Image (tube, rainbow, N blue to C red; front, side, top):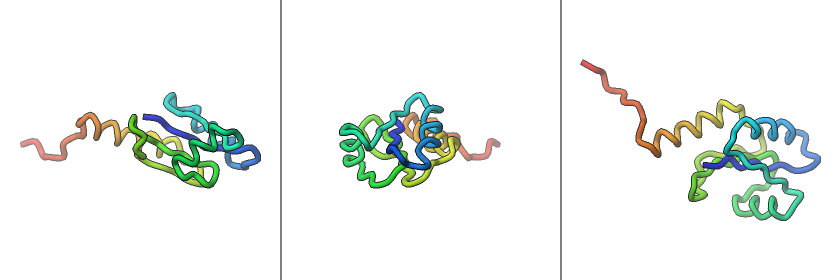
Length: 97
């Protein structure tokens, strides 16, 4: 799983986006001011900054937040739900008894 964070120089909300990204060891920051950042943004159809794309190992989008900075809890919740689904460890809601 990887959290891809797209920023650009001069973006007013991008410093906050970088701070959120730093809270997750599986994040990567892409600056749309350079070629690598532009290429990755094109791959995910990112047109605005800041944008966050959470992808699995096959680059399938799990969750995305475009043109805004999500709260760290939003990112953690999406990542946790994916991890539970992928490992089959979703808790049962059946009543015991």
